[in-house]
Image 1 (tube, rainbow, N blue to C red):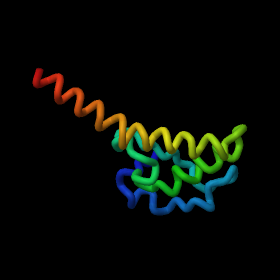
Image 2 (tube, helix red, strand yellow):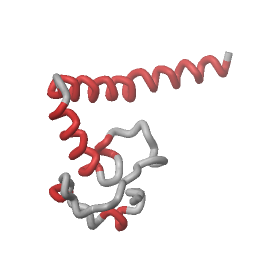
Image 3 (cartoon, rainbow, N blue to C red):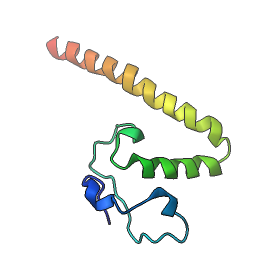
Length: 94
């Protein structure tokens, strides 16, 4: 297993090599790296985005689902989460 929190440990992994015959016998595990972030904010996001591309290219309506899910994530992060935080703050004072 390779943990991408230390970028030097994943420097040898190149996205074009990630095929069925990949020379990389490792599993990359992003656990504990601050879930709730966008994929682009994670270390080695190029690898995560590569597999997201593969996923959405293979599922029905993937070209529509991907932007929909990204929009849902953005709305939750930018609108819902701050609103929830504000309500909790007000309720604590009451």
